[in-house]
Every structure is written in C-alpha cells, then in structure tokens.
Length: 281
Image 1 (cartoon, rainbow, N blue to C red):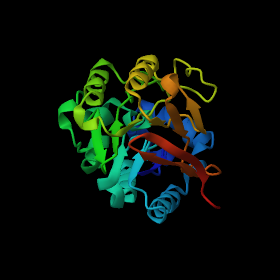
Image 2: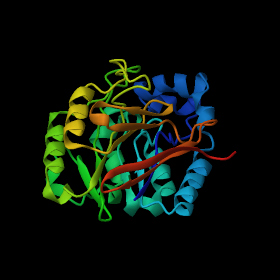
Image 3: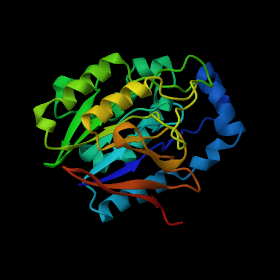
Image 4: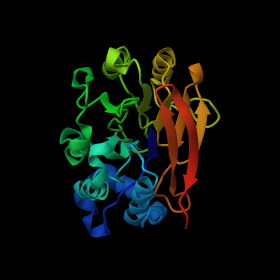
C-alpha cells in the first residue's frame, strides 16, 4: 500500500486591514505573523502547489492520502471552503486531522468548521472507537493497512501558545482500536498534528509541543504501530521513537521553498520504505 503524507497547507483568506475589526482579537494578533512579518507571502501559491501534490498522488497511484492538519491560516470559513475544494477529488481516500490553526478561535471549534468542511473524509470504517467527535477515526485501506486519525488541536488560550493534547478519551479509543481483531493482520499508521518528537529525538517545547506525547508513544510502541505521521513543525524529517516506531514530520507541504511530501510504502508486515520528496520547481 502506498501513502502520500502532506501537511500544513495554510490556505489563507485575503484580510485587508479594513476587515481586521471584524476578525476578533485572536485573528488580529495573528496578522502580525502572517502579514506584517511576511509569513503570508510564503503561502501565496497554495492552490497551485496542492494541485501539483495531488497530481503526484495520481501519478504514483497512491492508495490513500494523509493530511496532518493546519489546512487554514486563521480558521476562517472561506479558508476551509478553499481547502475542501482543493482536496475534493481525494475526499473518499483521505485521512485528515485538524491542526492548531484550524481551531484558532473558540467559535471555529464550537461551529465545527473543520468537521463541516471535511465531513465525508471523516466518516470512519469502525465508528465504535470514536470518543471525541470524529476521533479516533479508523480507516481500513485495502486488505493490509489501517490509518487512524487523532485530533491534538485545541483552542489556544492566547497567541503564542500552540501546544496540543490528544487527551484521555481519544487515547482510550485508540487502545480499543488497536486491540480490535479487525486490525490484527494490518499495518497501522497514526495521524496527529502535533509532533511527538522533534528531529533531535527530544520532546518539543511545552508551549508548542504535544503534551501527552509520552503516553501516545507508549501506546504506539506496545501495539507495534508502523508509523506516526504529523505536521506542525515546518521541517520535513524522520525520527525513530520507542519501539522503533517511525515518526514522519511532513513539514509544510505548500510553503515556498519546501514544497513536498513523504511517500510511504507499507504492507501488512509494516513499513517497507519511506521517501522524502521535493516538488520540482
């Protein structure tokens, strides 16, 4: 089975200064990073880049697409609409999870903007293992693979805090799924937004990292999970965690200068190969 893993696409709406008063203080604060500090220009070609990524998936005859969060910049409805439209032709062959930018405001979380945008992609094959909304979401891919999406995205208490938490409920559902006999003869890939480990093999900073990373890694190692796919850190890397679980950070697949993805090959025995691919310029 072949997976293409992308992340942190950051579709962004045009937010001229005259619109800022209607955005709310959280989004206005974020404009400092996205517009005044120049980050916005790194994602001006996101639609074009995502089209190229999906063309690659078609060319490579990928079986399943993995998107590990941060579809949007500010969790605005029009950003979700653009992301959903761009990924639309893969909606039935995709595991997608939210990132911290997709839960940027209490209203975005309360109104389930992410869930509404990607409703079809969040339909699980084993719904009994869900514990928190759509998560964990178990997809059975072919006869040899299971992909399980987890949500670590939480509304940040203030700008500058970008930490994540899977939480006890989802971890309970994950344990149940991993013990389900229908997964016993399949390789398992977990998808989460926040990085369980940095490229150095150490945990991320508390204000940016996955707070319950040790518990997630413990569960994955005990179950012999083949791989964990994540985003959040804008660096494409692979690190080996406890139990020799391979952890793949996709970086930002659409950021100017680092457009690309991970291509993973698996069968029921586990991970066969992994290639970090840069899109040709």
